[in-house]
Image (cartoon, rainbow, N blue to C red; front, side, top):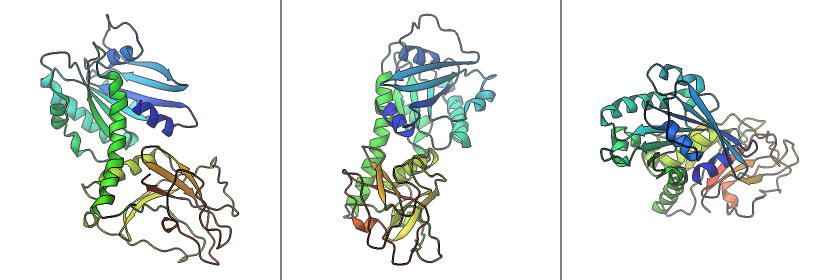
Amino acid sequence: MGLLSILKKMKKEEREARILVLGLDNAGKTTILKKLSEEDITHIMPTQGFNIKSLVHEGFKLNVWDIGGQKAIRPYWSNYFENTDALVYVIDSSDRRRLEESGAELAELLAEDKLGGIPMLVFANKQDLMSASPASEIASVLNLEAIGDRIWQIQACSAKEGDGLQPGEARGYGMAHRRVQKGLRAACLSRGRSLVEIILGFGSSKAGSLPAWPSCDAALVGMANGPLERVRQYLQWRCRMKHFAGVACGIVRGGSLVFYQDAGYQDVDSKAKMSGNTIVRLFSMTKCLVAAAFATYYEDPDSGIDLDDPVSKCPMSTGWKPAAGDTLTAMPFAVIFLM
């Protein structure tokens, strides 16, 4: 299941994730949740506050929060944003009159800082009804293609019949995840490269001992609205979710820095301990697109780079080998590359 796979990567240590389910009243949020829980859906009352369900799959716990969608309740949605790992937004596909209202509420949610960058799955519910709009039309009305700060997917479903719910979990995030991989591969092939260099966050104890990456307009190197835009979204999301054992994240193309974001995080429990006698160590973060975090430490000028992960094919040129006399601080950097 794609959603579970991503959440398992996100919450590897905790083995637990928090999913927030929102949408207008009568969209079918509670019905979807009960159907996934294999509960009876014959008599379902409108949610006046919130429901919490804990689903367990292969030892991984999903805490799903279903919040009421009535107008009187929506101002209180923000009380539930904290620590959300994924957003599920449910739409009544058969109620064309309220699509604009639903889109306006979704736009406000996407503007919330506490929900910034988290993956989103939109369920286009009630597809069993003759009046239902197709998911593609709903995506157009909601202007989902303009979303540029997160991984998202829309999935047609029928909570009543149970159709599209499991595929929504599998494809909703699985397809978005594969889209990142395809975008990166397309960007590589279009420039005759087998690798797009994505170098992140160095630090040094003395000024000038590390090379400075020149910055440039992302549009000049094909980043803006191009194949790598999905990669940027993906990196931004992983930074926010603190997946990297590093402190910064960026993309270097053609010798110029085209994307940079401070991750503000160090994995103190990683195998590479924060000491001066360890060399670079590689950690794979995902199977589809290998996101690896390097803990960069310095032993001696001849140590080079130790690729600790057997599946990696990252050449020496993507790492930075310190010159004699340079001393690195415990400042990791990360690299994303193709399998």
